[in-house]
Length: 111
Image (cartoon, rainbow, N blue to C red; front, side, top):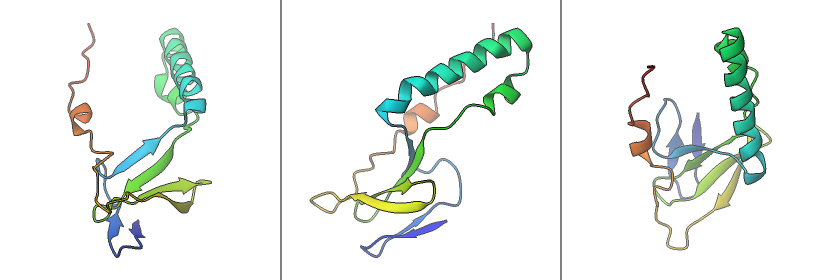
């Protein structure tokens, strides 16, 4: 997917692990989302089919992108329409979604 920014920049979303893309979960949905995950984990331990249970978790997130040229943020609305929701006063990209240190943490090993 390509998103044309009004500044003339192009946001390209054709791979994973992009530093200018994020998934946003509202505060209203945050705890309910983690409750779903906790229930799936408990059921997984009990029944042993975690992947099937994880597929049943409702994803409350919406996608968001930052233009690397001007810093303008775009979010999906209603699953498909783009909404330009924020433009920094100075017109500079802030790299607000680039938290690459989290993605490089080691995965916990089973005992």
